[in-house]
Amino acid sequence: MQFFSGSVDSTPSPAAPPGTASGLSGNNANMLYIFNRNGVCLLYHEWHRPLRTLDAQQDQKLMFGLLFSLRSFTAKMDPTSLDKGNLGVPLLPGQGCSFHSFRTNTYKLSFMESPSGIKIILVTHPKISDLRDSLRHIYNIYVEYVVKNPLYIPGSPIKCELFNTNLDQYVKTLI
Image 1 (cartoon, rainbow, N blue to C red):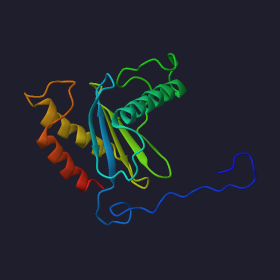
Image 2 (cartoon, rainbow, N blue to C red):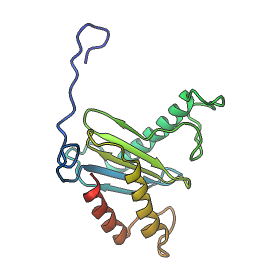
Image 3 (cartoon, rainbow, N blue to C red):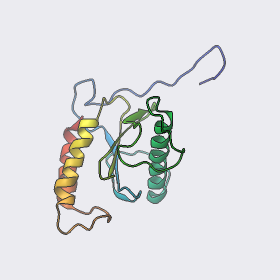
Image 4 (cartoon, rainbow, N blue to C red):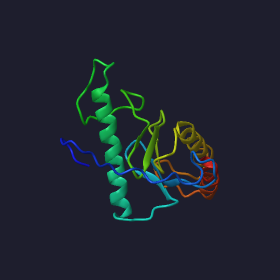
């Protein structure tokens, strides 16, 4: 893409995969992250990721940093709030303006933050529509099989087979 010139050459997004607007079935989820309020990655689940460029820890730090920056930026740019706070200062869940998703030509990142500070990020194909209800459903699966599990220690990585099984089943029907 050329900026500040007369011609624009933009790269179109790839064709919609099965299961999107075309009406065919298929799994279009690429990755899922679940972070706690302190930025600890409780779960990273991958369904389709053709290229791996970073190690898992570096990837998780970058994802949380991106979310932190986007939340801070959207709160700072909120035209309805007089109290803008300082850019880069952590926000409480539900505080300030929030974002739900963003799209590039190769993926769509959908985001949800619970009142308790749990952050759920789902990376999908760019042609996928709004996933807020799907993220709420994933959060409900998390509550049912992780939070209510008496063996789960809060803040530790999620290693619950029932959660993983139900998550996989739901994501397969998701889009």
